[in-house]
Image 1 (tube, helix red, strand yellow):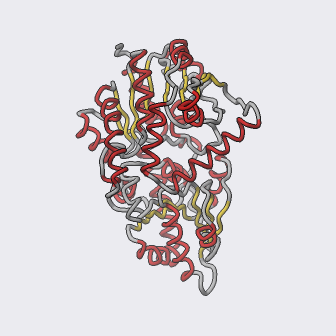
Image 2: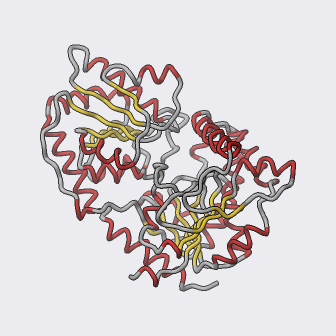
Image 3: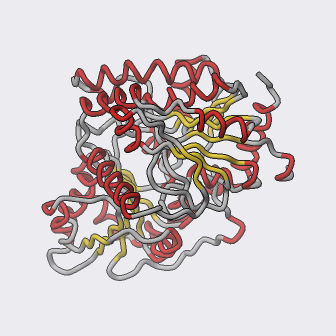
Length: 437
């Protein structure tokens, strides 16, 4: 399908679309579109820089907080590649980034509820927002569903004011109470969130999910017919590399360490303390943007482990290519065990493309671990006590590292080949766009 025939799309999501952000799920999907036929509303303070879209509207959350008191309207059109307008603007961007890092590390459900209240009271239903949507005049909305109620309020407000067909995309468990534990504020927040999620899901024209497990949950909850959609891999220039592992073996982790993931890396470091006791057999390089405390940083800079600052996407690809084992982790800690129950990290598709042996840690109830075990395309630990033994097995059997790299590469080719993903995404949005409201 030619780009000029594709419908005009307005995406309404949280994060800024930026080529160096490390968050590429949505922008990778829209690289199939003419950027002049894609528009984006987002709720961060920083500015976009992406080749997939040329028209943006920003509703900065720090402005929402101030508007509760000063009642000044929040929201403005911004431009691709725009820089901070002044020192105060840059300071706001940096402070917001630190605040989000802290919030992810120290989840506080009471403050999450306060945040929703701030958005409820904030002055974001503005003439500027409505003028922007009217000017864009989309054929279809692209509506990712998040774990915060204010995004559903914003999305539903726009849809109500300018009715158009819309397609939802769910990538996490944003509906069940499983992750709430016994925290009353978590239960209150989920009760509020569920109302918006339910209204969006039950009234959308089409709905994407990221795993088969999530498809079943979603269809059972909302009576939908979900379409499974994951990040695509361009295999046209890829070839499996069957070289022997390095000596010592090179392990790599690239990504954030939020929602308890650092705990799993700490357990790897502890295992390597024993494995490398009589000489370095495995090195483990960790590249993460997550700000960690001194104690965790010390552990992740010992026993053959080295923590690095984050690097650009292009460099990440090369780092993974040079590795022997790439590490995928979710937390096995009680408070975070179910956070990724229905998700499917785009990191996994990057790992499949690398053709490297995947070493994964996570609870057997979560979708990505189920997927890896279903296709036998990774070495999987569902208990911290398994880690050392499994790593020793790989050290003693280097051919096993190569074989699991091959399995990962072939799984990606079978299930995530880019042309298949493109066809699914484009055809689904085009189908929705034809159903005029």
